[in-house]
Length: 595
Image 1 (tube, one colour):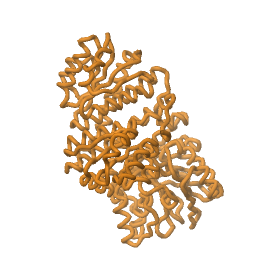
Image 2 (cartoon, rainbow, N blue to C red):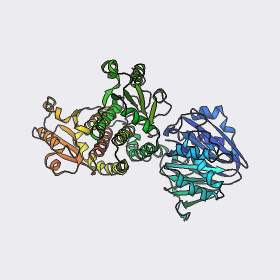
Image 3 (cartoon, helix red, strand yellow):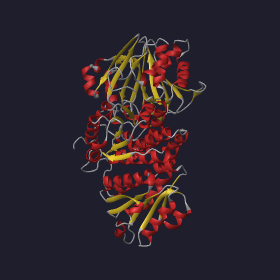
Image 4 (cartoon, rainbow, N blue to C red):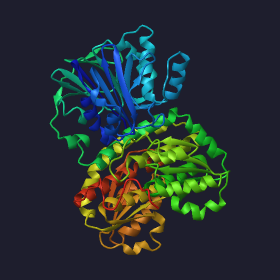
């Protein structure tokens, strides 16, 4: 999740120290490279590379950079590997325009081809450069800068925000479409950024920018226009009073809660990316031609693999074997060969157990594909083809948005493999938002009754079984209570003996599985237990369960994905209720690089 910052000042001055500090304050968003550009009269000074802010700033002496306008950017790789040429900001063909973006331009590959065919100088594979060339295209055709940005808006597909400037101009320009953007107004300067932390040390007078708005920044004023028709937009600035820590967390008490609520947006971004990706066809062709397909991961990623295997079977009629990475070698490796395909799944791309399985599979000749959130990680470099998760940095140790985007990716691939229209999947972000809004008060209401228990079960069936496993894992991770995830029909084969008066059992159900789940619910309630159902509104659940956490109406496969959101919220609120920090649970690490 990239971070951008731009500033316009009344006169030329040392901007390097300001840009370095702004970049430092955006590092919590996660990044793999950093760059800065200053504009001084007819000269652009651009410096960038892979690495941390202080390291790159020292190597290229950012501190000496001067000008009246400056841009800095932290890049989280999506299009193009982490490299100096792919680092941002980017120049236009003639080097008289410079810009940087945050987000994903999903038709980047197509646009690059167009720009090269039109004779433009395309230096990178990065979609941030496509934003600059998209504006350059219309400036070269004689349009003024605002009109060029308006027309470029029609060419750039996806969710993004960018800031751009040119020589011999006293302004910077920015536009928002999906990705965050705020403007700061100070004494003798204005600035724009993807997030508040880079602005607040300079000024607390800000404008919150909406989608489809173009911003022109002079040193002493800003102007907002609609990208639709170019009309002026009037908006009064506001005074921000939050602390820096609160701002970094987006006003949420913890990063985990913030990341839970970011899931609709990152789901939207990964769906846009998948729709425009040329790699999707390669993945699907490999799966179609495979003798056997394996989905391989650990922990949360394994649960996503399990969900993916259910979707592939139910939607595309394709059997897939989901495997815990450490078990792949002893259980399946002797039987695999070059006719088989494995998709290796890891949030970080550095999970040692997954990399061990990958190395062993490659030695057997298996076609190895990847699914990871960190571009440039070992997993993405070692696989023949990989798909990014587009989640940005996930600070909280418990995975939330990376899990749901793994599941969304598998669901998208299953739809495509089945030849289905993927447009219904575009409803997922809105359905996620509805689920979070409606489930939150319901979850908070039941936490006081459940939180005293240090032992409970979370049960699911079919496509909700992986969600039950994931919900149980989240509860174990951050509440330190023991919660066992299990297939609902297995509960009566022994664990039912644990049920006592008010003993909590969570039942996660899809709309087609309610009769089966009701049977399990009654096995618990008739023994005095507390059965909490998570599913779509259903009179049978209301009549039999102790409580029902309702989900919005959706197809069975989408409903299963939505069901994990209340479980994430439950784990979060129980953890906080116990006085624990859900972001950094004891004994755990975000990236497991040991056997």
